[in-house]
Amino acid sequence: MTRAAAFLLALVLLAFGLTGCGDDKADSDSGAKDTPAASDQSDDAPDDAADDDGDDSTDDDSDDSADSAENPAEPVFTEGPGDATLSFASATLGEGEFDQSEITISVGQTVEFVNTGDQVGAVEVAGLDGVTISGGLKEYYRFDVAGTYSVEEDISGATAMIIVE
Image 1: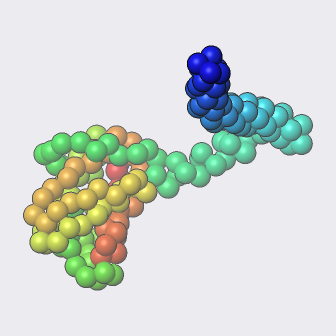
Image 2 (image 1 turned 180 degrees about the vertical axis):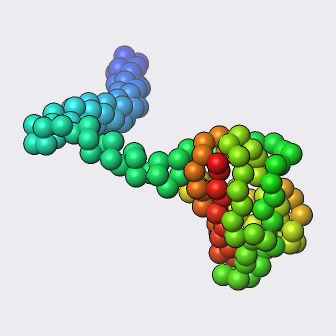
């Protein structure tokens, strides 16, 4: 009976061990199977597009040029001081405005965004993720490429334009 009990115990431990390994292996296998399939499809997609269109690089370039016409390059989130100031007061939803609707700066200059109110504001510059500015605080963006950049305060709806020459 001692041998039978030891054999049974060994089988139970082996079953638990294989079950644990089986779950890990199943997860990694399913992930491994998904990844090559996705890469195989993406490898085929450009070939098919090139066969249908002849030249798929023109489509990509036109999309890039449309984006760059609106916002030529992303401004750089930086530290002060600012060369120009754009102030806003946090207001109720839809009722805010910047102190200027448009400012003009030179390439390489920094704009200081000032929240003159006591509420939190969220400024979005050139379609980038908004930066939160608490009441009474400042944040800075440097503009390294000439162009026209849109600015929006997400909470109040205030808008302005920054022209970089």
